[in-house]
Length: 309
Ligand SMILES: Nc1ncnc2c1ncn2[C@@H]1O[C@H](COP(=O)(O)OP(=O)(O)OP(=O)(O)O)[C@@H](O)[C@H]1O
Ligand SMILES: [Mg+2]
Image 1: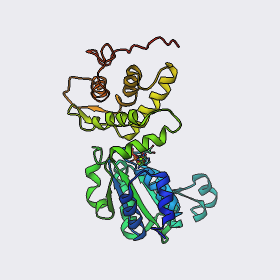
Image 2: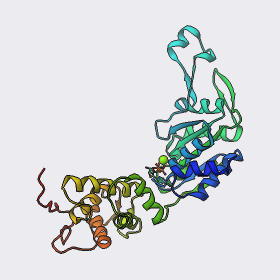
Image 3: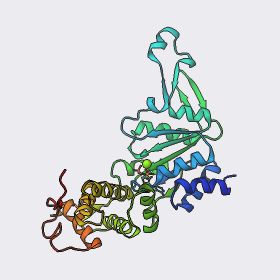
Image 4: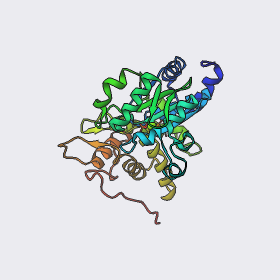
């Protein structure tokens, strides 16, 4: 069932490429293992997991990992108002996502697991190894068959990445998600700009600009494909607004600046701003045009042509 053609087809409508990663996730889940997807932001971890859960027809509890995810929020709590009248009766317990997933035998998907507080992480670690959980005044909850934890995290995120290493890594199967090929990133952007008149040639250059932010020596962090999608979408609407085309340099640079200058992080000690660096990359990819934006004045207000708003 798990590798049927229909499942593959269903997945390929939602996920561009990632055939191997999809196979690995499906295989690990079929083997009843917990899974950790590790990769930079925007590499399709959530997209892939949603597609797999949907494709396999399994239930899915989604939890956003952050500092406010206390054990009570994850596990559940006794409704204080009802406890006054009814006492600590099991019917008064409000299941949190962990208990729901354990009872239903479904997937618990925790985003950004490295951001959750230590005590919450310890609850998950116990459940992963024991398959059960002891909740004060409620008793022991045993995970139904099919319960699995799927976690995602960004390896380059300084906050807490080291903290989770030993105990969590030893209880999960890890699948690394790196950036996809240029062709696959173009296909992702194309899916998000369907119906627009953007040409393949322009789109491949836009993706190239974004990819170069990842290896630029002055940038510590580059943009994910999310930046490429925004770049293309903003370029399309800006061209419309200015009664111009995405090929027009003033439209292209402004769209690139809006989409990318906040996403990239300049290396400490660098003298240039993110606007200057994005403009330079745009010029390197799309070509420098005499008298056009960025000529010696990167990031300066752009010539908007004759259109008035
Ligand atoms: N392989 C892919 N197929 C289709 N869309 C993709 C793919 N990879 C990324 N995307 C698109 O890029 C965006 C970011 O993907 P997603 O949210 O899945 O990334 P993520 O790895 O979960 O990011 P984060 O670490 O920030 O949570 C989404 O809008 C998604 O549609
Ligand atoms: Mg995600």
